Image 1 (cartoon, helix red, strand yellow):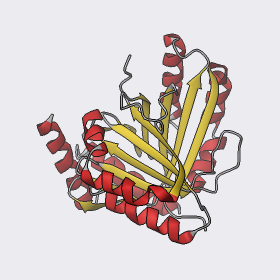
Image 2 (image 1 turned 180 degrees about the horizontal axis):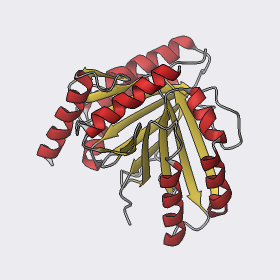
Image 3 (image 1 turned 135 degrees about the horizontal axis):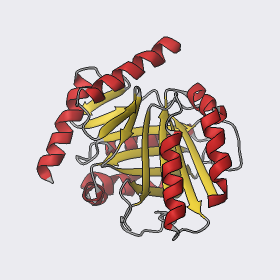
Length: 140
Length: 140
């Protein structure tokens, strides 16, 4: 594991220092600070959390959803086996994190036909959705 | 805005295609898929949300917290002015998203002296914290 981490560290630092990731700044080797981005993080609670067919359908649909042009970075995930503490919510089924350049990118995504089709075809699968939109510049 | 976006698009695609971001795959130009990472996303609700001194203290403390060695990427943010929909939670004060290579990275972070000091010195500022840990490999 150590060598893999060390490799990642050098690679990310290299990409940043080379100016290839202009929205990311290195505060120390290996740590990339993302600025000038809107993070759109969505958590889905499936109606039937144990139904693997439903989970697979949702994940595949989310992968298709990444075709929306304004998405810059993405991560599709599941609850990690981290320590159960009061503040940690492990109850969701699927995590979907995408980044846009700005709010206009997110707004365009909301009305993109690919997104509208995703909602229409898959909304019967979930009982609850929570969305957090975060910009690194405060509104006030 | 268009030229800036176009620039970001090319830059991210370039870094990825050049193999400089080995944990990110390009599914199309401009969209970077992050895999092999644990996302640790924390939302803070300040006891006094309108208190700018408190917000500043928390943000500066979070910036210091990024010194923990196992952090790979980070984004510190605030509620965006995106559309108010039932599913969107704009009520938090500060968003803190960090990425680790794996669960071991997150576990090490939890007990890192920098993290313990952060909690001790700042926990009086918030009334509520919600944490989501997401891995791109499902546990089961």
